[in-house]
Every structure is written in structure tokens, then in C-alpha cells.
Length: 246
Ligand code: GLP
Image (cartoon, rainbow, N blue to C red; front, side, top):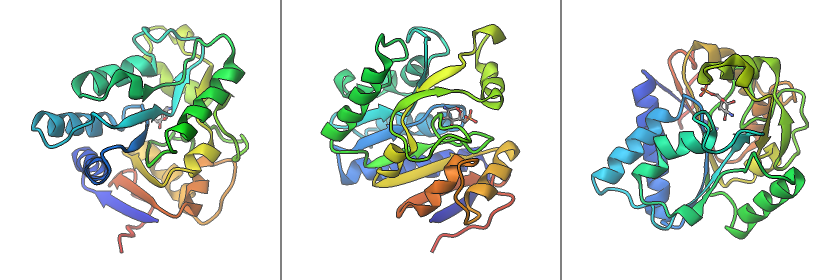
């Protein structure tokens, strides 16, 4: 595991964007696993800047998002579909048919999950998975207490996650209580993982996920067993951990 502790949010965003850019430069047909949340917004802006400067080309890239709220139409202003379009996809040249986001409105959720897994498999698996982390140690929407060996599935969100997500909704009643999430087993199959964490509310989760103990109460803790994982934290999120960059 490599751990980089950067001075601030901008430096975290820049480093993460450079890692994604290197992946695409080294393999133009890369399959990217992408995350939402407030943390990667700066990374997406940086990638858009690189694209506008002609330094990056997304024409052959395929993307799979980690999660989507269940029962929220994709046009909703707080859907992860809208987030991805606004923050990233509509500013770059990734072809629409290469963009994959779980369909939270699918009539048959079990089939939607199986097909999502199948699409990832047919694409050749995820080359680089970008992750954020929930304050409770969740990744994607794999909440504490869930099994760690699951593929894409419907998740009941924890009270903490619902409360954390309420800031993205005008009306607290609207915050979905369930979501579709790529599972930990699928995340662990990614060839490379980069996890970003910023802000002091992530410091405890970062310490627990790097502590050496794997447990279902801190789903991110399983990432310690991945053979190619990079954590990038700002000083606040990294306050309780040490840098490892050799
Ligand atoms: C949501 C997303 C996660 C994300 C987490 C942290 O739960 N499903 O993928 O990592 O929020 O979000 P933020 O970056 O806003 O703290």
C-alpha cells in the first residue's frame, strides 16, 4: 500500500488526476471505475482541464460508476448520473455508450445488478478504480456490517450515510434510503485502486482502514489486502496515519 499525505484538497485532486491521466496515457482503452461524492470533484475538474489543454483523450476509455441511488430518476438533480454528467462526462469526449452507471430505476434490480457485473466482465474488468470513503468507512455504498465478499447489489443505507447525504438534497425527506452499489468483491478485482480522502471527518476511518485489521465494520479495511492500492489524503484526513511512499 502507498499512502500519500498532501498539503490540501487541491494537491490531493491534482495527484489523483495525474494517476488517472497516466493510466489513460499508458492504456488508452482503459476501463475506469469512478466514484461520486464531494471528494473527487476537484480531481474531475483537473482531468477536464487536462482534456481542454489537449493532454488527454477519453475516446477509447470505458467507465463504470460505483453506485446510484435506488428509486431516484437519473434526471434528478441529486442523482449520481447528474453528478457525473455535470462534473465530468459532459466536458470530455468519452463516448456515451462507454459510460456505465447503475440504473436505480430498473424494474428488475437483481437482473440490473447481474447485468452490471457482466458488463464489467465483458469490458475486461476495471483497470483503475477511483474511490472515496464514507466517514463510517464505507466504499461505494458498501456499509459497515455488510458482507465483504459481495458483487453489485441493492444496499440499505445506514442512518449515518443518509444523514451525510442529506446535504445534497433540498428536502431531507427525499434522501434515498437504498442504493445500488458495486460490491467489495468487484472493487477488489480492480487491477489498481486509488482512494481519496479529505477533511478531518475522514481521519478516523483512514486510521481504521490502514490499521492491519480487516473487519466488516470498516468495509474499506479490506483494501489493505489489495496488491496495488494508493491512498491520497490531505493533512486533515491523514492526521492519524503515516505516509508510505517507497
Ligand atoms: C457516498 C458515495 C461514496 C463516497 C462517499 C463519501 O456515500 N456513495 O462513493 O465515497 O459518499 O462522500 P464525500 O466525498 O462527499 O465525503
